[in-house]
Length: 365
Image (cartoon, rainbow, N blue to C red):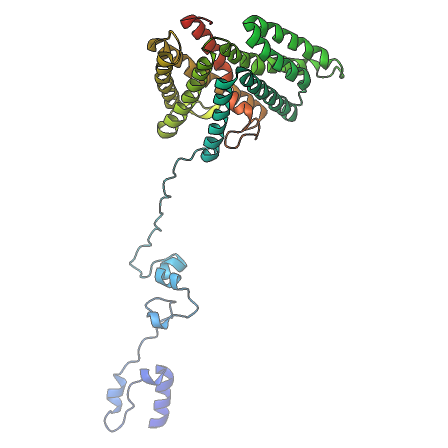
């Protein structure tokens, strides 16, 4: 074999020219050339040991920075263990109020201004405000009963009888309120007879319940107003109920951890109930001492405790009704609050409690 054929065979064995040993010539004999070994052929492992300048331009930069472990799920080197991806815990969620707080405050302030203005200017105007609230509340309640349960409580006799009940309670007291309640129930029974008998029992039962729940309980507000210091009594009733609800909301939102009645109202907590009691008792002591003629601070403590209990039970009662109906709010008339009934829920059962305690503490007039 001549030198040229031997060089060609060696080039085929060794690969590229830069990987070859120098050919045997005058400076290198055949014996020295045989001791020069070719570089071993290493299989091409994608990205293993490649410099950043040699990577494919199509590789994504973020993927390259993660190395082979990010692309293939394996280690970059044989003795390296795969690294678990670090999971970043989600940022803590801030507590959020369930409603539009700005809208709720704005509507509340507006309603409060209307109520206070009518209360201290002309008593008859405030009676009209109560009657309107009762009629709208009855409309919301009967509408939801028909939509969700197919119960058709007659609205016309309820609305007329409810308004008459408010006026009778203001003019004739408890006796007038009971008579108007009985006549309203009778009107519901007769009105429903004009329709087919199917569903008669459930319709009239719902009608009598609505008459008692909305206008009859609201009549005690009119009875509070009929006293000589009626505006102060009504204002005390409203302030204590609002302060109780505010205390329950503020304390429960900030510190609430233990559910009060999770199957009825998941948002209410025991801490919120304690806040309602504390706020209402302080407000009651101040109101009885400075607003009610003949009242004392210790009577206000008892009054505040009773208001917190009745307001909470009233709220839970309406929550029970709404859960049975499968709705969140009774209406959408008041932005940030829901409907009229969603604001009357704690006021309605609290009215007879405040009326009774004030009669016991300082008399009916």
